[in-house]
Image (cartoon, rainbow, N blue to C red):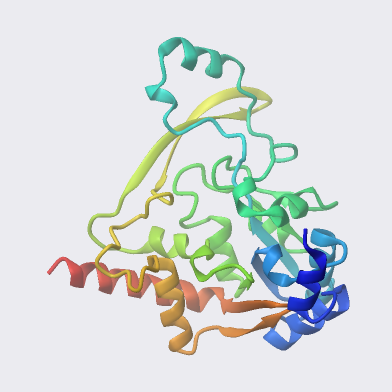
Length: 285
């Protein structure tokens, strides 16, 4: 880590109190339920790293507020397991550990904060292996309870509950295309050509490890073919987020050294669902 360069870029250390002040200026408030995505390197030099970021967020939302992250499962079996040689498949199926909300690591691709939050004392993680979320605060149990096995981004999901609670989505230096909440809009959207995936993963059912088949929208390649509506080399989620900001939905500002954004979840889902339904239909006329 080039700390002098980070200090220069951020105008000095990005401390807990500085982060909290910047978050309040962006619009995050006491009592908020907020799902956050973070690119730590964008913030500048943060003394204490992930712990400092989480504590600053907790300072901002207070005891009545709740923090939420998307976790996934870092060591999940590969999606293409059925294409492996039979003896390889058999070995994996015989001994691959079941997903455990308490011990299975969050997907490293989501950065350091999801793993840090899901390990935090009192954090609650949802039961779905591939699309798991974690939350910390008084609304955590309600957000995570009964995460649907199938359609885990749709009705009854933690994302649906975040929107129903008038929660918010915070991008701390994370790019606009990282808004996981927009998968909920995809799940709800009624547009042609919606793409789905099916896969198997081991979970614990009444204490017994079992392989279960899951069905979800295709979040890896896109639930729809967005190729005709992407612009300037940006993927659809970034385009949707830019259009939301242009429509007055969401706020932009600096947190530490990072360009950051705050979106109201309910309004973002409604906007994105309409955007998808109108754009995909228009493209197919």
